[in-house]
Length: 224
Image (tube, rainbow, N blue to C red; front, side, top):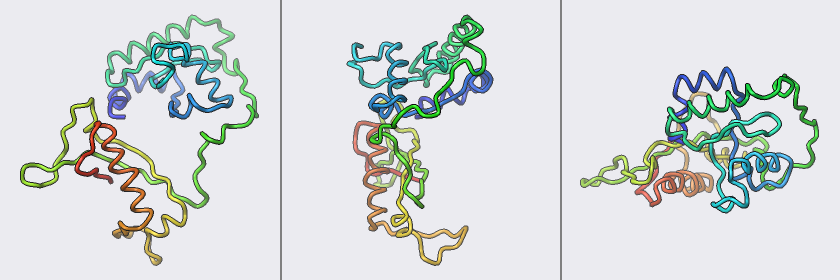
């Protein structure tokens, strides 16, 4: 996430994305596994980037930044979000290829998406629980210094020591177990750490989210 943030905080990339593209974010882990029209579309696009079943990587991760047309024609692709200079050139390459396409393929409405594309793969179509909450989670690695005090951890694997974002879904019963019954708007309070919801948050979102980015288990993960 920190790597991609470098490219998408670049003013020129932001300008091109707003003026010439329709930005879409999707989860590669889901998209390459789902067995429905959306998954078929994604595999068709990523196969064109040599990330299909016959690719050298065995068709595993297909993550990256893709530029494509509405009909699935791949214009350019690069997994270099950490390098704004490279991504600026990739976007320009995609625009050049787009402008070379016939006019009838570049007109609004040239591609019609059916209202019903068939059944969705239920295993990869997640829907928030009724009356639930989606919590924004921000994590960063922490460690202990020579004095036993908490400090920022040092990570030798990429940008694993940078802050990261995630989301935690809570059912209605879970979030109610964390909030006082007489809670008021704007009020702050300490949530019970030993509750099932608190344990799930710390066990699966805070510490693992931090440790998997660095390839090791930190002293703890900090969330906000």
